[in-house]
Structures are given as C-alpha cells and as structure tokens.
Length: 269
Length: 284
Image (cartoon, rainbow over all chains, first blue to last red; front, side, top):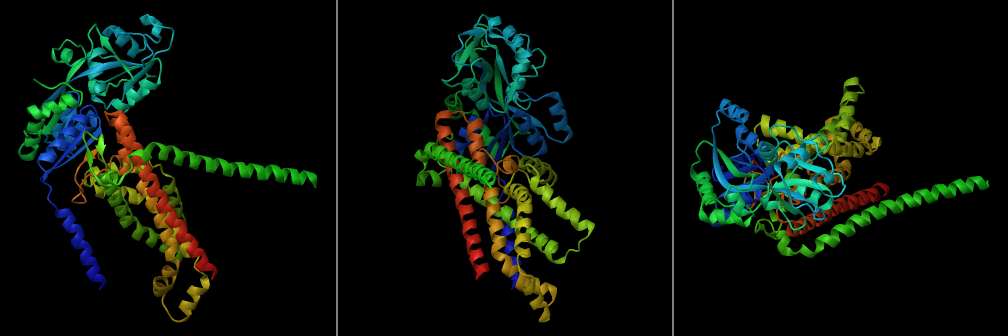
C-alpha cells in the first residue's frame, strides 16, 4: 500500500515534468522594454490562447546574461549588446540576433518645484560627474543637486552614459535606483533631485526638461533631433522560428506598434 | 520597602508601554494597508488575471503561484525537517559532530532571505538547470523554512514524556516502532504548528523567489513544475518598482498587500488555534 502511494506521487511528478514546453516564451530583461513586452504578450495571448508567455524585468544586463545562459527566449534590452557579451555568447554557442521593436528617448526629470526649463549635454555631464553639485551653477536657487542614476545592470544607464558621459564615471555619491519607476518616485518626492528615465515613465508629478534646446517628445525622438534617443531591442538566439517568430512579427506589426505607442514609447514607422 | 514598590511600578509601566507600542505598530500597519487596499478587493479581483497593461483585472495568477510555491516548499522541507528532528532528539549521541549539526541548523535560521535567493539562483536555476521555475523557487523556500520546521519538531518531540517511550520499550517494542507509533503521533500537533508557521513565512517572502521563481507577468496558470509563476509578494514589489501606470498600479499593489496580509494572519491564526488545542490536550 505504501508502495502504491509512491507510484502515484512519481506518476504525478513525471506528468508535470512531461508537460509540453514548446508553446512557451520566456521574456526577461530591461525594465524600460518591460511595459512593451507585457502589453504585447497580453494581446498576443488573447489572440493565441494556446501560447504561454512570461515577462520579467531585471535589467538589460540580466536579460542578456539569461539569453546566453539559455534561461530565457527573448532578452529585452534598452541598449545594444556589448562586444564582451557577444564574445561570451559566441563562446557558449549562442548567436544573438537583435530586433528593434521601438524607439525611446531618455528624458531628464527634475522635481516640479525646480524652475529650470532645459539643460545642455555639457551641464548634464558636469552634474553626473560631480563637477556641479549646486543648482546655482545652472542659474537656479542655491540648493544641493541630488543626483539619481541607475544601477550598472540597467541599459538606460549604459545608453545615458554613452550619450552624455564620454566614458567618464558617474559620481560615487549618486543614488542608484533599480528601476525607472523607482527613479520617478524618488524625484517626485525629493526637491533638488535630478534623474533620467525612459519616455514611457514620465508622470505628471515630475518635470521633464529639454536637452540642448529640444524637448523629449515622440516627434523629436523619431526625427533624431532629441540628443538622448535610442532604439529598444529584443534579442533572440539565432533567427527566431515558430511561435517566437510569430510573436516578434506581432510586436513589429502595425497592431504591435500601436501598443508601443500606447505604452508611451515611439513606434517605428 | 517603598523603593521596591517604586521600581516595581516603573518596571510594570515600562512593560505595559512596550506592549502598547507593539499593539500600535500592528494596528497601524493593518489600518494603513486596509484603508488603501480595501477599495479594490472584490471577488473579481481575486479570481481574474491582470489586464490592460496590468492596470485592471486581478491577481489570480499571483495567488495560484504563491499557493504552488508554498505547497512545494512544504513538500521538500517537511520530510527532511521531521527526519532531522527525530534523528537529533531520538538517535543522536551527544558528540561533537552532532553539536556542529545543531549549530549549523541554528545558523541557517539566521541567514538573510536574499542570501537564500542568490543560493537558489546559482544552484537550482543555473547549476542544476531548473531555470526560473516553481521547482527552483520551492526548493529555495524549502531550505529557508527547514530550520523552523526542525526546531518546532524538536520541541514537540522533546515535549513527549519520557515515560511513554519507556513504557513502549518495556512492552518489547523496538526503538523505531516506539518512534513511529508512540513518539511521532503524540508530537504531531506540535509539528503541524511549526509547519503552519513556516507556510506563513514561505508565502510572504520576496527575496528567495526574486531570482528563482517569480515573474512580472504571465496569464496562464502553471502547467508544469518548470513554469515561472507570479507570486503575491513579488507582484507587490514589481508593481511598485517596474510599473508604468503608478495611479492604477499602486492601488493594485495595496490590494495585493492586503490579501497577502490576511492570508498570513489566517495561517498564523490556525497555528495558534492548534497550539491552544494541544495545550488543553496536554493538561487533560
């Protein structure tokens, strides 16, 4: 009798293990791309009920590492892969293929009480390297600048530092937030704070300021005028096929790009 | 004499105030979470999937995910926990090795939960290749609650009167028969109290499942132990840090927090009830 119980347990476990794996898509990576991946997955599953898609954040670096490790099917990234990552991937027999799914601008946000209207790339660099530490340097009131940046696993951080920092490091006393939303929350509660987030994360409680005289808008990002714009990627291992291809085609389709716009990003033409 | 009364008075007042502070903190948390979360709680919230970019719909996948993870954790931790406790109380000689084992178990109880998460990531997710899955998350949670189950079981086993063991052995039963038929059955309700408290802990932890099991969004219910799942504590964390629609998502996060809180209170309540019953049984 005891033995029969063991058999039943084994049978249940093995049936769980045997369940089909092929209609599953696992997406991981950039918190900037996360809203796009989530809404696309939601709509895609609505139309294809037999497909199972899971979406998680973590950051571009984490997603790419998982793709290389083989623990996810699609890596969301808000930056292109680094040479080092590509080398690691190739060594492990992974052939990363990039798919541009949307355009995004990195908006510079400050507390609404701050009167500053725009900033230049040089000033941004001066603030983030620590050369400027008071708003009076930018013609504002005498108040300490509280610098908020993203952690190093963030693609937004990589893109921001590539576009503005010319290879210099962010000042060591900057507050590092783990997600776009966390940056917005900190900035909206901290007078004197400055941070940067993806276009989709701007809320009415923070003030987005222009960079080099250009406001961060869909039009200025699409025309390439806005200096801090970048493409957003989904990476796959090799050219996608089957459900994976169908999903990526959906994201790039007219319908998918409409969802991109709805999430606050800029669709591809 | 007077001085004695005075210091006693001060002492009692201090004890009384401490109790009030504890009560106030519990009350404040309950009040605050309930006030913010109650608006959204409905049957539909509990039974539907997230919709419209996670601004509408409910938390059903997170509830189901937490259920599976907790059951899985107990499934792994209970047999090993009880077996370890039986060994330590009934069989083990008082040797150096056993003392080291005891110490390790106590230390395991003090390990921060995020360390279990990283351990699970490197061992279960990467090394064994289980991926981010119910299996990895359950194993990680199982190891986390193991020390709790061991010490609760040990206490329950020690509480079984020595005379019962002796009576059984005197009747010619072997030690194994004594343990199986006398000691474990008498200790069962104490063991279950420990298990139930561990369920509460496993259901409420975020860090161990952060890298091993939890996912931001999935619609379906898991179809194998290798599925990623949504889980209540992680759902709250993810909505507050990674959502793009703060107004709607903060409300959902508070609603989820309220559900989680009620769930854990209910589980702990069950443990308290069982313990009371056990006490009455012991006195009788």
